[in-house]
Amino acid sequence: MIIDGLKEAGINFVTCLPESLLRPLYTMLDNDPYFEVVYVTNEGEGASIAAGAWLGGKKPILIMENSGIRTSVEALSRLGLSYGIPVLMLMCHRGAVGESTYWGIAHGLTMQPILEAVRIPYVMVRKEEEIKKAIRRGIKHIYSSMYHVAIILSNDITEVEN
Image 1 (cartoon, helix red, strand yellow):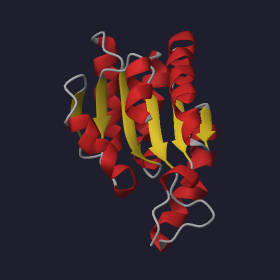
Image 2 (cartoon, rainbow, N blue to C red; image 1 turned 135 degrees about the vertical axis):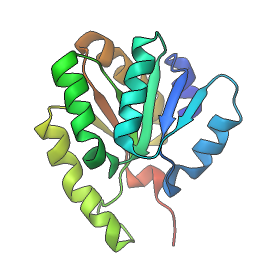
Image 3 (spheres, rainbow, N blue to C red; image 1 turned 180 degrees about the horizontal axis):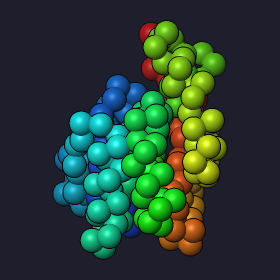
Image 4 (cartoon, one colour; image 1 turned 90 degrees about the vertical axis):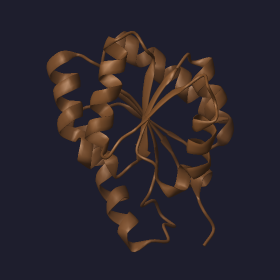
């Protein structure tokens, strides 16, 4: 669903910091010549590379775990608030009710307050059949607003049974 949604929206450049919940997605991206994929060492770097790709005429997306919003907030604030350079983000939602790891809880507690503090609109996707629509709407919004959008995949979609 995600790969098809990215292609339908014309997204052709992906920056990402791989994490466990979306592991199969990274393999699919690597094996699909349609996408130019750049792996990064932190999410702030990923946001900056996605912004550079956007300036270069690509249609990029930053894929990360929601903890990355804490790491990338300075880059996103500078790019969006200061320069009007949008970044579309796709992230899984660690820390939601039902989280099985102690370290994931903080990700859920801080995600929404940080997104709201820097005025990043977001959509929580709870069903797989909503993914394509969320990506289409997200790409449309970054072009009309010239600001970021976060698409968050709920644990209903990404949950791994332990």
